[in-house]
Length: 393
Image 1 (tube, rainbow, N blue to C red):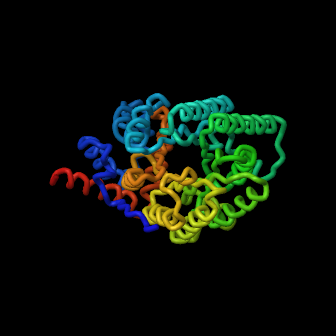
Image 2 (cartoon, rainbow, N blue to C red):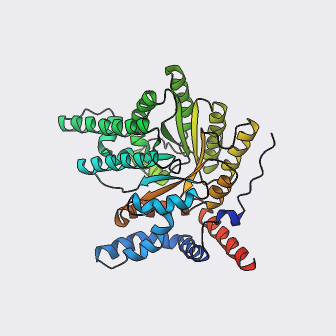
Image 3 (tube, one colour):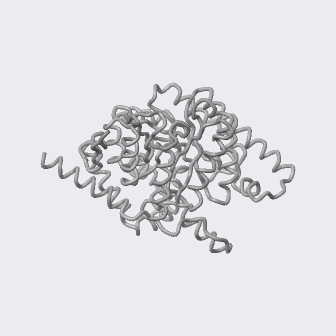
């Protein structure tokens, strides 16, 4: 089978969902984000403005929030869900409220996640996945203590039982509704706690088909070996692996902590090493595609093309249920829309939540993506190319 022809430079397809006005707004937004100065000073200035009650929420809502978020509630996201579905792109509803740390907030996040699962079950395929972060339903400090095998006091033991119960309820809802569920990766010093919980849920719910997906961050040098270890364990114990493959989101934080606390950094020596491991993970998963379902969560064109080529070589159909591509809403539309047009399974992460509560998420994303060499320039250049094409056409 010949490798399918797909071009990530086709801007007519990439921006087919955007009007000229929307494209112009995207242009100015990415031009602003492309300035490292703005990304550095924007967050503190915004928090200051909110602190002194300047009316900047409408401005944020009309720009940054509109580009990268689906709305403030699940129902607000309906327009985005329908819009993406017209182009055969699925939605992953991501409740992106960060920094809450009370038992009441953890319970509310669990309920919200289960609501997204029920919404996905009724969506007729337009919402193929649900997702949650374990720190949305558990205290960071408690996860850290569990990982370090520190003794828990009575209050902490009760809190830990509630954490496990929330996760069990979320995963049971996903299994009952037959909705695929991502459990996101987080910092290395709580990740083993998350892995252990996730592996337990995979062993329980992935016996017949893949429902639960763990997330593997390949900016860590140990994740390829860990993925292979997980596959070996799953094979021995009779269940299937769900693997969302990403490069990662906490690199600077990880390096800084390792340096401060005097332990070996878990981070790859350079980006090339992360790329090599990511692509090796794609090859490993495609080799075992009957027993591993993957979501390639990447904005990297080379890795996306590699997966396309691997599928062609193995004569795997473009819409094989075990293979998805995924990007963030408002970014890398040249990947998402061209892949979907060619018949591949594609889903966009669609963050939502109250504007003020989602701001930490938005700032972190802006920071991460300006740190990726050329990412913002690439977005901007594609938008410029499409605007020129429309003018000349």
